[in-house]
Amino acid sequence: MRRKGLTGMSFSSAQYILRETLNSLKRNPWLSVASIVTVMVSLVILGFSAFFLANASNMANMFESQVEIAAFVQTNLSQSEVLALEDRIKSMPQVASVELVTKDQALLEFGQSLGGKKGDLLSDLGGTNPLPDKLTVKANDPQEVVGLAAELTKLPGLETVSYGQGVVDKLLPFTRWLRWLGAVVVGAFTVASLVLISINIKMNVFSRRREIQIMKLVGASNWFIRWPFLVEGLILGWVGGILAALIVGLGYRWLADYVQMTLAFLPMVQSSALFWQVLVGLILAGMAIGAVGSAFSLRKFLRV
Amino acid sequence: MIQLNNVTKIYPNGAKALVDINLRISKGEFVFLVGPSGAGKSTLVRLLFREEVPTRGQVTLNGRNLVRMREREVPLLRRTIGVIFQDFKLLPNKTVMENAGFALEVLGVPAKEVQARTRSALDMVGLSHKTRAFPGELSGGEQQRVCVARAIINNPALLVADEPTGNLDPETAWEIMDLLYNINKRGTTVVMATHAKDIVNQMKKRVIAIEKGRIARDEEKGAYGYEL
Ligand SMILES: Nc1ncnc2c1ncn2[C@@H]1O[C@H](COP(=O)(O)OP(=O)(O)OP(=O)(O)O)[C@@H](O)[C@H]1O
Ligand SMILES: [Mg+2]
Image (cartoon, rainbow over all chains, first blue to last red):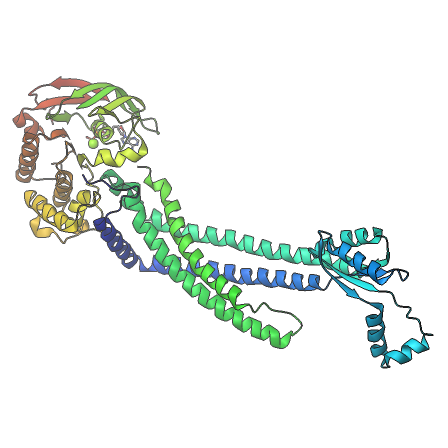
């Protein structure tokens, strides 16, 4: 008897597996079609929910990136003291960026918004600039804005700290909820797809349980029986995955264009890297589900 | 070679198929198992290639304990045993050729060699003209002969036969018996459950009679001993 590895593979076994797989596909063409459709439908749903998650979290990010803290500096501070304060804030761990808007810049912008010239406004104000220097602070995690603002208030040299309290207090729970919703949708549909696919594979295995039993009684190892099922699952999953990728890919492109035209304010993720990642992911998921699902469903019937 | 110690088999539904069986079969023996229907012959036979495990007691084959054997080792055990099943157990979607060659295929024997050896095995059971037929297209006796071919193809150390002549006309039955006789001559141990009175009486081999799950009789060069 020749020695074989863990999986019992040898060249003639590989031939056998291919022949068996083809036979099985030919023998139950409708079961094969049903499996492909099941995998496809599941993955289409999964693919769209992945894009939904990407868009939900993209939208949340975009809203959050607009959240910033305006910290106004006390007017009696010298320029070097202001710069020191800026450095101090920059060195805080929660802080992503600090931008200094000096009172001169502020006045210039203010004047421009009134439509006049800088000199005029300054002289109208009696030669002194009443505006304070402003530090615009962004947090690493926008969800921490409230805490960061509270800490900034404690710093000496800062007059008032504001972050658009009313809006942010409503926005942050909303973006958190949006991300959660995306994750839950993906999670729920992943489970649903797995259940759908495993029912289908179990039917296939069940219809061949007598065959499996006979193979075992004649001395076939578990892997000898498993391989053809595995390869079959892999192929069916692959075909289902490709179809799903096509549908999701074309569907998302169309949807993105449509949304852009009708609801221009809604930002859609257009990153082509993400696009291809999701599509390749769907194909790989199809193959993995097909192969692992088959092997898994076999377990019960291999105990002969 | 085969040893059963205090073997009792009770099926999950409560049927007591074997009760406290003690039995020893040496290498190279030819043993008939006889007894009325439902006596437990098939059950005993199934213990030998571990289709069933005893409820109590031990089964030893070539020094290996089949009760404590690990799941992974079972295929290796079965490859050393040829089995002629009472219900044939042929794969319905495979041809006669593929069915008979299957015992070699699971070993990873190259396709050419499988073909050649399967052809000669089918020749021996007189089925070389039906290699492409499917089991559903064969008579009961023909199916049985495919099963015989599959069982002997591997030159097993032990041949277990559960009524291998049950569906055959007397002439074909004797051809199969000739086959088993010759295989036994070459050193294979043969254990055969049967109701074929004439065959048992003429072969003059060891006869073990089982009744209601117990050994009722165990004779060298025995006779069938039941009136039909
Ligand atoms: N898989 C099973 N599950 C439950 N009970 C079984 C099973 N197989 C056999 N039995 C019972 O065990 C007893 C012995 O059956 P077995 O098949 O061993 O008899 P046998 O001697 O081979 O009979 P026959 O000559 O008719 O083939 C019977 O009472 C039968 O009903
Ligand atoms: Mg029987």
